[in-house]
Length: 208
Image (cartoon, rainbow, N blue to C red; front, side, top):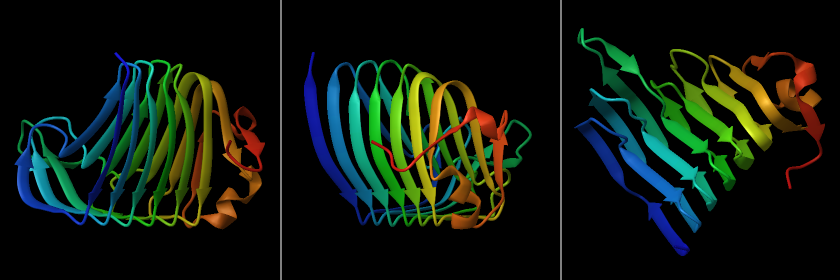
């Protein structure tokens, strides 16, 4: 069944809570069209026992998803393992799979004491993403990870971000396009790591 959804989530605070799933989970599936704006929210001091993220956005099964994620503060996001140890988890997790299209902007967010930002493209998902002006601190691994494992295209505009622990760009399948590829190290603060090698990526002047 085809459906359409448009909404805004803004100026909310979630703090000092315990979860066993994603704190905020936004999904679109089944021939749906979804458009939303997530801005000015604060998520802090969260712990849980399951696999979760601060905010999880997922598109699957023939969906079109368009959104802006801006001016949010996400900090102190932990998972507790069986030994009682606190393990950092993603502040923001974005995923496309199953013949989907995602077009989004992630900008001017402050993310600290978490595993930062993760973007994943699977199956035959198609992504066009602008990621800019984000500050990621106190991450336990790479502050930003983009992983391409789709037969389609992932176009990423990565500019003016700061990550204390660097940026990791991974390509397994498909076409991974980077806007102004050679300028990315100069236009972001933090080391840039690519896998398997720089020749696996293509440079474009802009995402479509």
